[in-house]
Image 1 (tube, rainbow, N blue to C red):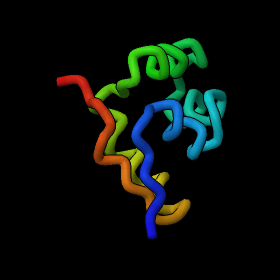
Image 2 (cartoon, rainbow, N blue to C red):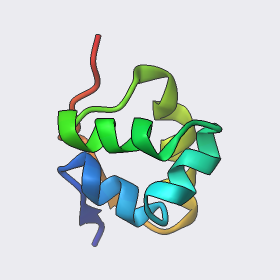
Image 3 (cartoon, rainbow, N blue to C red):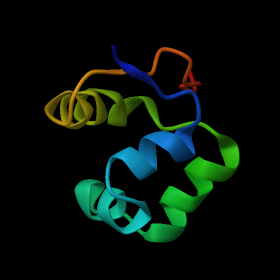
Length: 68
């Protein structure tokens, strides 16, 4: 059964935390912190995040808010 991730902070933690995600996208840790505050991630990050999460095991993250 897959784990359901419904908050951006849960996704960030699943990916190794703020520093790891910042390094993944070559952005500041403050930018990742802003994602947590907004509970949203930029749409251009979706594919890479999806790929990374899939390598870590089955995860459902369909409840995330992606800005349009």
